Length: 94
Image (tube, rainbow, N blue to C red):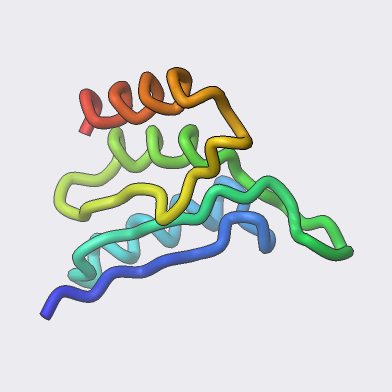
């Protein structure tokens, strides 16, 4: 059985946390790391948050084994053509 990790990016995720988490997921043998695509919390307080596709680009460049991707990426956030191009670019890098 493969086990992956899913996190909500809007609950205090910053670059140092993302980098530590990603490297730990890979080192500990998890199959993958997945994220939601939310900019902010639904209620206060507002916390750190990383843009989904930029954070996936970091994974493409800094991991070798794990699978990764969005669990959801709403079409109301970006034009579908932009989302497709970003996904294609991350795929090319990985």
